[in-house]
Amino acid sequence: MTQEKDIDIAVFGATGFTGKLIAEYLGKQGDTKFVLAGRNADKLAATKTELGLSDSVETIVADAGDAEALQGLAQRAKVVIAAAGPYQHYGEKLIAACAENGTDYVDLAGESNWIRAMIDKYDGVAKRSGARIINSSGFDSIPSDLGILQLQNKGRENFGQAFTRVKGRVEAIQGVASGGTVASIMAEMGAASQDENIAALIQSPYALAPGFEGPTQPDGDSVKFDEDLNSWASPFIMAAINTKTVHRSNHLQNHAYGEDFRYDEMTMTGPGEDGEKLAQQMADPGAMLSPDGETPQPGDGPSLEEREAGHFTVAFHGVNGDGQRGVVRVTGFQDPGYGCTSKMISQAALCLLKDNVETQGGFWTPAAGLGEKLIDRLGNTGVLKFEANI
Image (cartoon, rainbow, N blue to C red; front, side, top):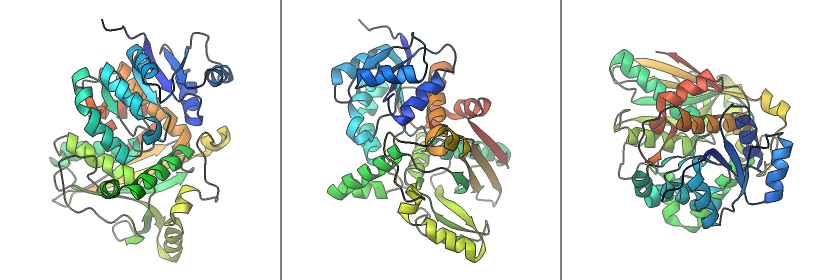
């Protein structure tokens, strides 16, 4: 007998820095029944008190390694938000439980090797149960994935064809990578150093599009001058996962962007000698992760004032086979790695819960799984702003 799901959303990893922000945000969303889940009962109780949450908010003890407890959580929850990473260390038993129990799931994973392993192992399971599994539902990779979706939809609407060449360009950003993101990058690099197959996988832009091999992609890994935009451009630390997510979205939509779709993602630094100098400085991976020289640690994060001072704007410039052009800009109004990410993943979970998403079970991206409904939700709630000029 199937147990009735009596929880709307379970926040797993609720005592971590980003988990707390998610729980705090959900506590302001009205009639959604959510619970806090994690491995330590005392920390869960302290988090509930610290956030001033209602007595009706339940706390559930479940360790990432306790398959039985995670099965129990997935059997009760309609949607699980997984906020405990690195996911290749702490994520598999939870994603398995959700896939097996028809429980919708969103995470912040940026570890392409782990995501691909989970697709290979559990996609069939999720399709049979009806679980919608949506990875990379924070700053990596919602702005890129949804920005390009809107650009392509506008391109077909206005020109009758997709933009087969798109440049993602960070125009402004205030805020550093989260401690969880840094830990995930280090975990993926560590896995690659131990396994040449993983190293080869993460080098492929099509790592998350099993069975497809498209055209050679533009080089976004070195400083260059972009003639079209009259600006120097530097590698962007999130491009490694964002570009793979976008190519998976294209793959899942039967190559609606074209089988010859080409995409790169970089940070614009301006023209002239100053632009070139800044681009060279930003090309240092250490500077991209921690501009102030201090590497953020998991569980730590910026103050409320710092989060509210943060922001970002990413522009997606498209050109089609006839030379017609369009651009979509996506703007976030808090720091990308914490404040905005916690809202984006919360709204993705609420979209699954409330918006009559017709997507069937399986592993999806934000664009392919939630599409325009999530664009509308993020825009209507003021989490992101989408501006199209086609």
